[in-house]
Amino acid sequence: MQQSAVPELAHNHPRPIHWVATATAVAGVVALSSVLQPNPATAAQASGPQSRTAPAASSPPDPAGVDFPIECGPVKELVVKKASGDLDGDGKPETVVVVHCDAPMGTPPDGVYVLTRAADGGAPRVVATLVTPKDRLTVTHFAVRDGAVSATLLGYSTADVPSCCPDVKTGAKWRWKNGVFVRSTPAGTQTA
Image (cartoon, rainbow, N blue to C red; front, side, top):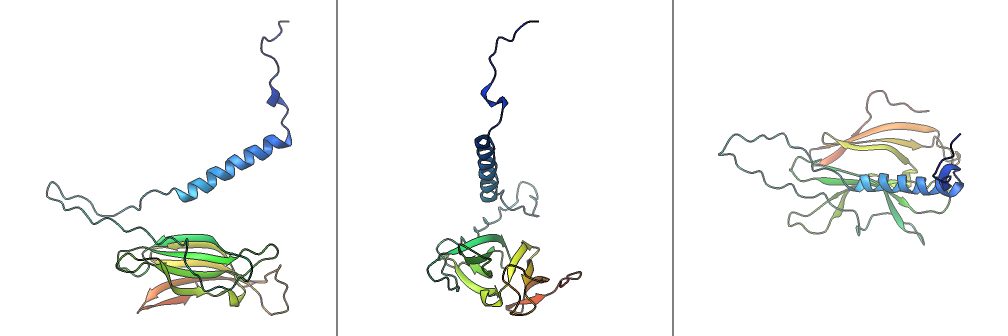
């Protein structure tokens, strides 16, 4: 039997550090992919050599540096989810964010805020609060699609329910109508 000319490779026996390195690399790729997104698609098609170019879409408001109406005491506020889209039909994207306090323990309640930019391109600002942290809700399955904001909200049936264990699950959808965001409950939502 002929012996291999290549010595045994050091990574033939994976150690915990190999798994940590792999997990870190995968987390980095996932985080980077959430930051790098393709340009939004448009339905307009060129009509030949005399077509006009559409104005460039403005970028959605960035939540960095926005003062959110949330009281966090000694800890920082943390934007945990964000999505953008044209909610009011003006051709400019708004950004919707889910924010909570960066508490070291427990499940801090979320707030959902709509951000826009002034017509002159000024700094982003909060223009609507869809969910306030005072409601003690946690937001899951959050999206902006077709001019609407949708989310699944986890909450509590009474004040006696521990913060660790929400016992009510509700779907919600908000759509801009007559100058305000109107909330509806999508069909098929349930409470636990």
